[in-house]
Amino acid sequence: MLRKLSIGNYILIRDLEIDFLPGLSVVTGETGSGKSILLGALNLILGQRADTSSLLDKSGKCIVEGSFYIKGYNLESFFISHDLDYEDTAVLRREINQNGKSRAFINDTPVNLNLLKELGDKLVNIHSQNSVVTLNDADFQMAILDSYAGQTEALRIYQQGFRYYSQLKKELEDYKATEARSKGELDYYRFLLDELVKAALKEGEQDEAEQRLDILSHTEEIKGSLFAAAEKIGRAEVNILSLLNEVITGLLAASRFHPAIEELASRLKLDQIDIKDILKEVEKLEEEVQFDPEEMQRLTQRLDLIYRLEKKHSVQTIGGLFDLIKAIDNKLNEDDNLELKIKSIETELNTIYVKLTQEAQRISGARNRIKNKFEKEVEDRLVQLGMPASRFLVDIRINNEISSGGLDEVKFMFSANKGVLANDVSKVASGGELSRLMLTVKSMVSRKNLLPTIIFDEIDSGVSGDIAGKVGSILKAMSAEMQVIVITHLPQIAGKGEHHYNVYKSEGRDMTMTLIRKLKNSERVEEIARMMSNENITAAAMKTARELLAN
Image 1 (tube, rainbow, N blue to C red):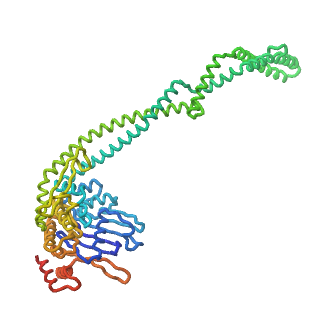
Image 2: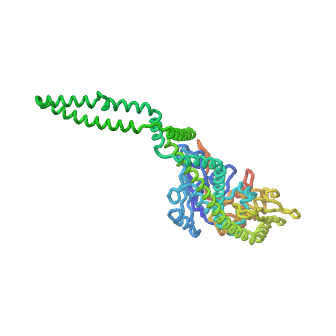
Image 3: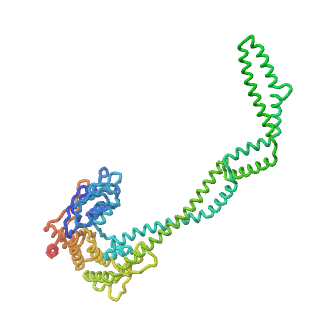
């Protein structure tokens, strides 16, 4: 139940605080006085979005705060599940700064807007003139029927599962589209991989083959160089080794006269040993280097294959080909994983579909079981509202496939006149008839849901006279089970209220402000009389106002 609403720096409200009480409260005021502004402020703490246009003073901050008595409405689990402190009085607050940025709080704990709205939906239901139009909406009609049947929570759980089911179906479609697009590519990748695997490439073989082919291509030059080297080092009549030997012999002879020369001779002997080893290596290489046309052809063909593959795949080395083999292999493995993923999703979808279908059938059964009772109760209440010839039917048609609403399509059929077949509500109901029909279904559903507070914004559209009084009686009856707040222009409804608030404008020197005050009994008489009069309040109007309040 809404106990207090505080509004600061919001549109035409500088600073305002209102206390609300249980039962039926009526809010009246001249057109344009700002009743809709109060409702807009309340909507802010119920999770509606806002911007800087909400600020009266653009240099300040807008703050709206509401206190709700929530004991007995089984909301403890909501607070626990969202890590919020539970108290019998919950305080919802909304702040909007100069930049249009908004902050929301529940019991002084910062929360996101979705969570604020989720709690707000459990505390207050606002029925405005615009919402009458929603009576034509198929989803709204189904929600009304489910609420009456006590299936709201079951449908919420079902829809949560259906959303996951729909997301999974979309995911499967995306995977299959990817599979279809890549099917041709994968065949090509398999061809490439097969070609590369058949090439039997080895690490480092390109460098080795190029070096070996270079040797074979220059065999004569190499052998000639090696032969000449061997001759000059040790095989010719005059060679390096024989000359070096003569030098060593001479130095040794002179070393008898100079000790340092012996060391030089020893060093040359070591060099002589190295040169002899070099000669052996040169002669060995000279013998080994032989021209092999078959090997040269084989290496040429092998390198041609490697060069062709490198050019084909735009890589510079054989290492690039190995990287490509790894990449293609990964791509093909991804395709295998994609196929497994698709099969896994298909299996999960089948399981979920069976479960959802069973739940949809159960919900459908509940709808059909209360259908006749719902129709009769609506018709009985419409009789009370001056529509004795009205006919109301709920058309439930079962589909072959599940949807967000289950297996059913629900349509409200209505006729206000005798002898006229019931047809789609949107095609046959006038504004006043829609208002009365909406009030009827709202009163029935709210009694079952037992929301703490329901607010009607000008539910009296299109009704007057005796019917207005009956509308007031229904609202009064509803207020025995919940807090009902009604914004109205009709004195017949205003007279039914236990508490009466008047919204008015105060003209200041520089600015017009919207204000609200709770009327005393004597002030209520004058306000209701004003609602029945044109410019001047007549004695007859005052008398009628007293009678309305007395009744």
